Length: 385
Ligand SMILES: Cc1cc2nc3c(=O)[nH]c(=O)nc-3n(C[C@H](O)[C@H](O)[C@H](O)COP(=O)(O)OP(=O)(O)OC[C@H]3O[C@@H](n4cnc5c(N)ncnc54)[C@H](O)[C@@H]3O)c2cc1C
Image (cartoon, rainbow, N blue to C red):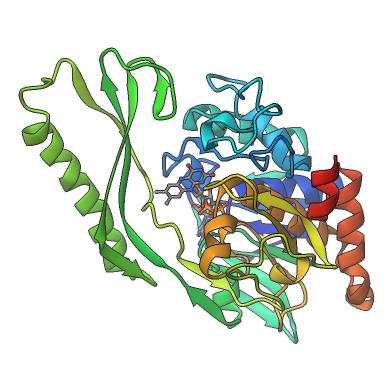
């Protein structure tokens, strides 16, 4: 017989969004379980070796993202290195490196994320792969998880999809949209005499980044995932055997760490009750849960509507991170760490406060929690500050 466990909130996936969702839910008193298929937290931001916490400000001196995301940025630097430019507030039309952002070590981030969960009494299950689900009417009842205990059923009142792949949305047969991914290689290498900076972790440790825009993946299959990993590693072998030959040797430059997951940017996203798309920056949404900036240029600020987290046919499922309901240019913004943090926080509050009989009041309650924790909901207000 399958073992069964009962929680108030279950968060699927322990990336940036999942960690913030679990902390937010636990802060509201929910008995919270976070399920993670690997043995590390952070998802792409750590196992995918992404090491830049993109800006929380608009590049013109206004902070736009606050709350648990700001706390996470500070926590990402606790175990070093990383620093926020001290004069980001004075800058106008600032470049990305001059803004309220930092470089972090993936290992430091893993330590900090786990500490954040433990301090907030979130139960973590590592090495636990979500494989199935039970539905009851228009709600999810439970998830099936495979781990060393075998097949386990975990039941909860509400669920957060932080899988980065909209896995829960797909399992419950909500509609999803797919993004286009190109081949990217991000790896850590030793390179004598590097200076600390954008792509430098610490002196002598370099982030090797390359890509192939011609090689694309949409709705990647299992075979695509393997090809992606093999192709990026083939690219690396070529660098060390051929391209670096002459300029460095195996004593002055070598691979230190390679990604443990494919660096797909946009796999699948929920088609939510609402959706954001191109040119919706600086747009007022009555149900906004907070703000994110455009990491590519100074100026634009995006309100994120609660409806982009809500599953149209499953009332106790909330999306967060890179699988919220956004397409096109909006997905370029919402797939990044600041938005993962923001939407994770909101989805966590939503899951903790969800009551079937008061479902229509949920958005207002989430907005109040976001504001109580320092978030600003509307862009005009943030730019006044
Ligand atoms: C090449 C590249 C460069 C990038 N550069 C930057 C950058 O410089 N700065 C920035 O801010 N962002 C960057 N991003 C984007 C950013 O890193 C991610 O999109 C963001 O971290 C996503 O967070 P998430 O929590 O939504 O999802 P993920 O990080 O994907 O986390 C999902 C988690 O769910 C777990 N999971 C999935 N399926 C299951 C399952 N069945 N059972 C249990 N657990 C499961 C995964 O193991 C993972 O830990 C980059 C992305 C790429 C690909």
